[in-house]
Image 1 (cartoon, helix red, strand yellow):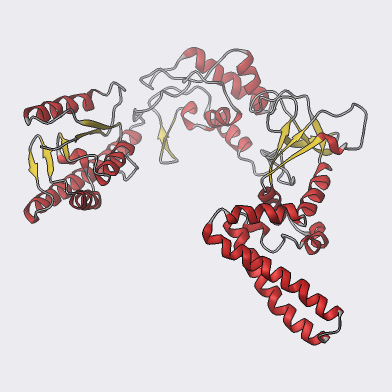
Image 2: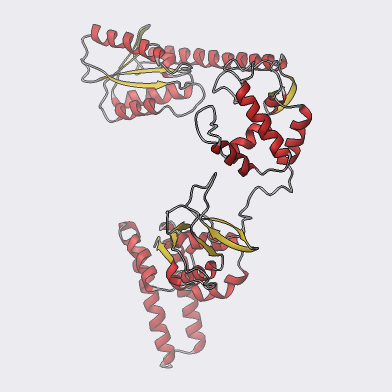
Length: 463
């Protein structure tokens, strides 16, 4: 008798969210385990999860892990197609059971000994049939979706769209009026962020009850649905069966406006070294980039999409201060020691650290010999070149193992980087800064002071 049987249940779609399909499977499987005199099974349930799509099924993977660990000695499932609809998964399951010595795989439609040739053959045939059924169902579903689209009908499924009743064929008049207001105000020149603020001030929420964001308002106004048009796979294919909320002409103007390449949608302009690293010293929110009085700045923003306090701002010239701190830190013994300390925690990296230390000591010894005229200049250059090459390669390996590939070649050698820094583009500067810095706290400044007090800038180093 098995020590711990497992029950696995799965249903592909649970539109109502009640889990009734899996509950019926579980009840039947429990009864089967009890009929066999087995102890209370461990239950693994993947609700609303397809076995054909290839997506990860968390509970199925957990059951496999339990089988591998020897915690499960038998599996009860309502039907084999609840376990697999792809032959490749069956082969993994069979191999796992064989390795763990699990022979009892019981369904309410028969038993399978996956360790025997005949049992595995039958299971393979059933998996192939299930895969074909799923494929055929997928083809039928796609054809049905296309047919509905061609007739202008909604396909159903998912949350109802804003502005429409749950049947998707009739208007929710209050929400439709909101959409008309949004459209007219946008066409009148009002920015999206102002529209979001109006929605929030008016206590108007999305169909899920959440607050609006600029992206959700933009997507709503770009949807052909609100103009009474039917879209299928990203293409408008004709008139819809539901009434339009705004005219096709207004919708075309909205699409042209919001998709205009010249429209500025990224206020950060991707010209900031420290984007995403700065935190407001008052409220802890991420500071955003922008311009104030035609100057580049980092600021704590309040309002839609931001949620900060709005009480902290600093000139982008803080980048120069931080860059100097980064370049200085690259040459500090503390950084080399921190990287070295990380590596010494791993026995496999200890030899690399020792090699780097030995090479560095040898370079010092070599310089002493040259200074004492014990070796000639050409001899010094030849020996130094070989040691330098080895040291550079080992430091690159060390930085890579520390998760800081951007620092390779710069640790203890920031002088060359310092000379290149003004001409180095952001794509090279940013990884170096982020490899060293976790975040930067900007504390409030003194009103009227134009220069940056370094005390305002609190850097939290990664290493």
